[in-house]
Length: 266
Image 1 (cartoon, one colour):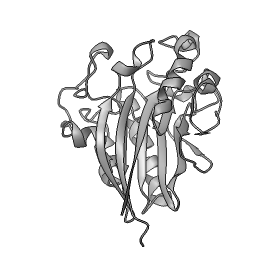
Image 2 (image 1 turned 90 degrees about the vertical axis):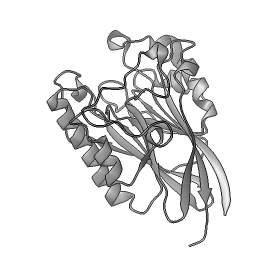
Image 3 (image 1 turned 30 degrees about the horizontal axis):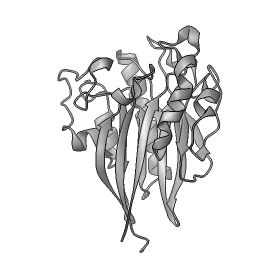
Image 4 (image 1 turned 90 degrees about the horizontal axis):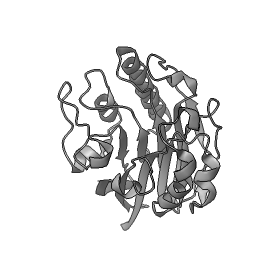
């Protein structure tokens, strides 16, 4: 049995137009693209109006093309040192504009099939669900996760997968269904596996200020995975890389390293 390792990261790059952005992506997006080059497979969200800057000095050999800026694009892209097939882009069936204007862009999820080695592939899902904490927001978000789960059941049954992105979910929220999504697809959350068990619904949120973010804090960006009969995924390390990306006003990112065991035997 051959043993290989690869690393993955999910990163909301906050690439909204300057007029509506909470940061200043014009000043840090190029540097952000350079920094993420060290990870093998990256899923980014909100890669809208500064996409060219993000890719300009990035070193990944395989990258999805932009689907457009606000309001036409989803903001979802994948960058990889491993080859992958063309991207599938799916828009959510439901969104809520109650307090976060989620219907302003066609948010949804993407799928690429990444080739880790000859004859060894893994499905990589990227997602950005409905934001907000109102009942309407959480209802839309639950619909998003169910739509993704249904798609995975139809298109990735029996496949090894990594699902990572901005889920906008917290285990502590009564109406959030991230736990049900994970259980339904037999996934493992890297944070739950290595840092702490999933907090109970209705318990106090484990939020932290950006400047003091640690691994103990629950973040809405999540990395989930499962193997299959031919590909055993073993988690080597989970780390919130917030501090490493704060030097030039980069927004927080989350990363995990997956140790990959695979066998070509059938």
